[in-house]
Image 1 (cartoon, rainbow, N blue to C red):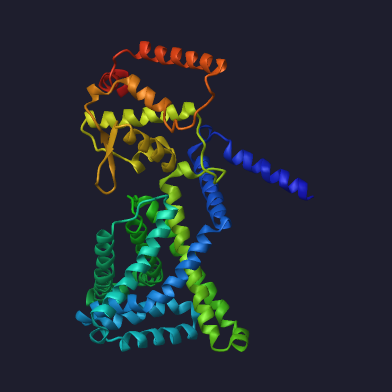
Image 2 (image 1 turned 120 degrees about the vertical axis):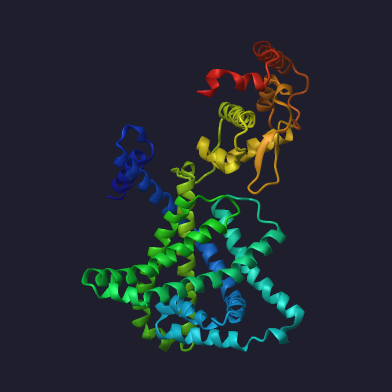
Length: 446
């Protein structure tokens, strides 16, 4: 029975991953792509990296929550709308039921008792450092999900993070205030009194919390990763995670309502345990949405195996030439310079594979990387000065030649002769053709 089940699963996987999607109708192709996406997301959860990072963020959140809310509270206090913090907090803690109200009241009490004047310069610096460290931890997790090695610089990180922490709450509260004032206007009340519109207004009220969560998640998926994230993938991930978060909240509320036995076992620690569990679930759902957004923007990562791709020498040569061709062509046409993400999407090749190729071209002095955000790539020299045989030599000789093979033996000599013949054949075939000659060929622009 077990062997039959394993055989059936292997058969389904073969059909799922080895089928040519080009032979199917658009509807069936979209369905198979959806099943593949579900497969790789479940695989990410089973590997454990998302769960481990969610656990790490729970610890960081426990340390940083009060300072984060204190900074937001101080900003809102300047606009005399500080009382709006508590409803947001209680909304997040609502799945904990009565325990959530108790935790919320304690946190608000901590914030009220925090006197910035008493903290002094050092204490205030520690306060802001704690807030920045939380968002930095989130960024590191997102950079892992998006396969990004470089984080923001310290100055840019501090400016971006503090602007969100200090301006974000004001914008959110202002938007809610405008919505509330519009809903209470005489005209809107008159429209609600008309039968069909009243029902629509009621159902809109049920939908708005979901839309607000989706909008907040979309903004964070766009802002936090240190790369350019498209709106469509971010919105897709936010929609899934937003609906999951609201649904998980309702289920967790039902769970906490029937968990009175935990109070008897853990006593006063039951509140903290429930709070930590809900924090963990919230972070896991949030990171799951980020993972979905990444796979939607980079479908080349949706593969059967999670292991890194090992490309052949032939594929490496083709990719290197293609990357150099695209960078040079955009330079000649004065088009937007290529980024790593743009090349990855164009060629449907994982960014870590292209990153190695780009680094090789940079080391050999064929292209340069700009300091813009995100980084773009341009030819390092005039295209008339880069010969094709030089470019071919780079693709063939990438890597290190530190290891000495052989010791002057006869087989080594015979191999060297063959390699010299191949090098001469390349030079004879390419002559003095340059990269500019190559990209000016009309058939290359079709």
